[in-house]
Image (cartoon, rainbow, N blue to C red; front, side):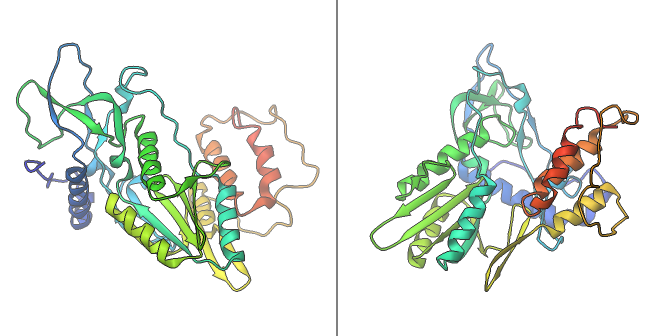
Length: 337
């Protein structure tokens, strides 16, 4: 990694205002890669499938929603940079097997918040930087050398740890995190694989993982501080402080409970859809409204309709009053009119 060269040339003048942050994010990415040492050089064997790589750092800065981290108030926190392997070239049974990685159910998230309020526990939020780079690979996966990384002719990189883009990367990360947290004395819940529980004669600590975001709460602040320190020794972590914004949901701690809101998410839906009619309606759908698949002409492009319906499904987390209306609309996603 000492020979890896920073890509200092951005391909578009539109990205030049982002240059200082762009380089900062790329430097952090390279430091994360060098710390995990995901690829020793290996001699290229005959008939060995080799994955190419995508190096879209210069394409994802400010141009894609996935490459920007947004604060709860809608302002930009920072731009992201990724080194992405061409996972679409992988074949099942050859360089990957199982890919499923569980994530926390939203019911579990609400339950943890409710338990924390009833017991008067504080909730802290943590974030793992470059989470997928921590996953260990059990399969043999070879990749061409990244740009700027010199390798002798006939040699490629064998990945010992996961990269973004690999099909098994989410599962490898979850398995690695599970092994670390269970070694710290936590046990996996019997009802949901993502909450981890630590119990002792004097305390109880709950930790919930959603990909690279986690919530931790309990009645022993010293043990929570110990867990944060232990995780910080294993992974690059960010302590985001008390819970305020999680998975696009604003969380406000009031005297009579936690209030969950998706105000920013609603505004984003309105902006993307182009709706300008913001009149208040008494019900989400007209009474006795009958919709049929044969009504009207099929849309030439149903992508926008499906995107809006999917967004409304997620909005139902904090607005259960629209669930019936969204259920009706979901019946026409195959051929909307």
